[in-house]
Length: 83
Image (cartoon, rainbow, N blue to C red; front, side, top):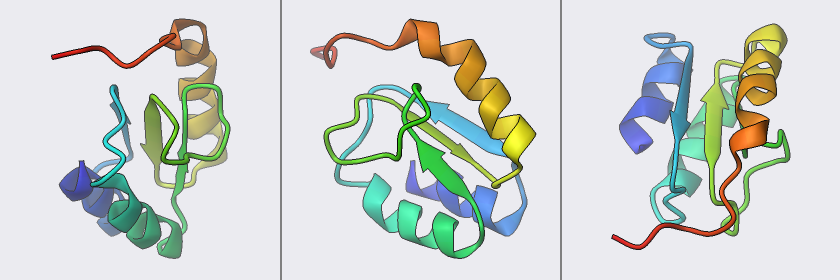
């Protein structure tokens, strides 16, 4: 998760989607990504928090991020899966 966020910040990839959300790995990547102009939200487009179940991270390109949110918002899980 962290590596993918750093790749987005560096411009290697444009976006990444993840479920379930890893509340321990994401905060460091979130900081790096946002400092580089990227955006990280849940599937509903709300800012990501440690309570978020889903993650969409993108390079900050508004149309790209909004398009991913539009596609994935109907698929928001009700609870975290048990592995």
